Length: 550
Image 1 (tube, rainbow, N blue to C red):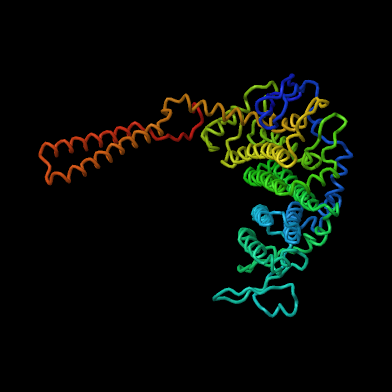
Image 2 (tube, helix red, strand yellow; image 1 turned 120 degrees about the vertical axis):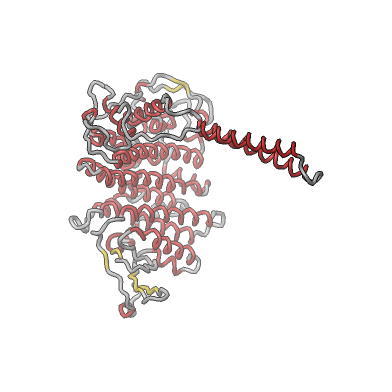
């Protein structure tokens, strides 16, 4: 297990709210004591709040759909593809809700732009997940229009210079219906083209009305996604216009957290089987899931303030817990969010297995030195005898995986920081400020999530010392590139200035004297010498294939 030598937030001594905290949450500075507090307890809501949140967003019904396995042995990717398809259908549902909204004061155009952008992000991520999935249940498309008959579940696309392609069409999804609405035809058509474009890397397509001009097999969308059941998981608080927005945004969040949980399990399996390349691919997908979650939560910025505040009061989002902390961080009522966050932190335990070196139980730098050597050698084998006891059979994918680990860490911190700013913007800074009766504010508790020490201290330390190595290297001149650019610019400026003066003087005299010609040749020779000298002073970076000291 990797040593975690960073500061423990539970041991922080008394401090006052200032600097960054005051900039984020303006108000009267408060004396905050974290010395005797359990940060995990502070950010964890009560069981009653968790249960209320799950009932509100219909999570029991959604979980039942996610856990039901239609192809338990034949399709391993079912556990992560199904919730991704559900989230896509939820976006279609939100688009239809915006189009049917009769409030004259909402920004309908911005809603449609944001939702279309979110759907494109989901499609791109989905296509990466199923990029090499040859086991998905599909139906072959036909190149003959005789299969169409009178059924409305097929669509015929004609491609110039070739036979017509008959594509199967989902009968339950909202997207084909949106494309048939007069007010939604443009949105529906763009989404269908986006499906065609993004699913180009996949071995199949979705069958939602996209052209499918390549004639690829079509996923059994209605059976896997069950759009009608997803559509039924809506409207929990009739009479509140923003209820559907708040509910659906958190349903999409839960769906992609389910995807992330499945990907994290795949990463662990691949690391244990020493498949760094596949593990790195899944790890980059987890990072993109966190960024997708940020874009999803950002939809709450567009809610009408007055309508949302009425809903917020009836949902008791700002109810205080028994600890005296305002638990207005509504997302933390999600069990899966806290579970996936913790699982991302636990990726640090896979670092010794990835590098092939056990961490020193006494806290020595053995693992850090092995990582630094790995980075310096670009993952290539350059030693006759493996240093630090690590294997010789390295590949650059090992570095890709370690880089992906840190990218996931950065994405997790970005999510919680952006969510904190979201709540301040949507509900006001008072929701996260402490009161006179509150010893610790929710801001203080939640901020510990993104102010925690590095999840991967060995990787962090290895990059720090690798930077110091090159900084102290005699082979490189610090700032050589910038010096070269500055000298080159100054030289060119002088040449241009001299050229302009010469051009202006040529209007007064038709012929230069021998002395003037000699002067210009001397100047030209001097400028050329300066350029050559500047070029010589710039030393190109040398690439070392061996490890330090090798």
